[in-house]
Length: 96
View 1 (cartoon, one colour):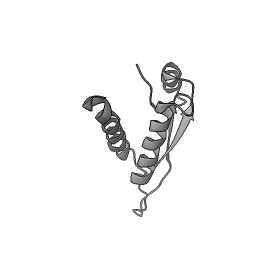
View 2 (tube, rainbow, N blue to C red):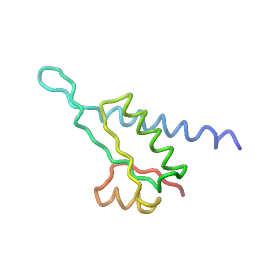
View 3 (cartoon, helix red, strand yellow):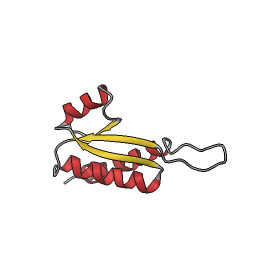
């Protein structure tokens, strides 16, 4: 396994976490933090490598931000992109 293949998932995970940090919960007038930001993360079938990676990313984002991420199995890369296009998901993980 090349170094790129081993480090790429970590880089993608870090990028997703940093991107979603900017989407954190709203702040109310009294300065309290809200956690009403919800994101659906579309990916392939349960048990696949992409699904496992999406669950790991979602867990990291939940722990590091006020964003609630729900992983949704939609059947593959093409279906994941379709889910985003139709407004059913805000993120997707697939392969080329």
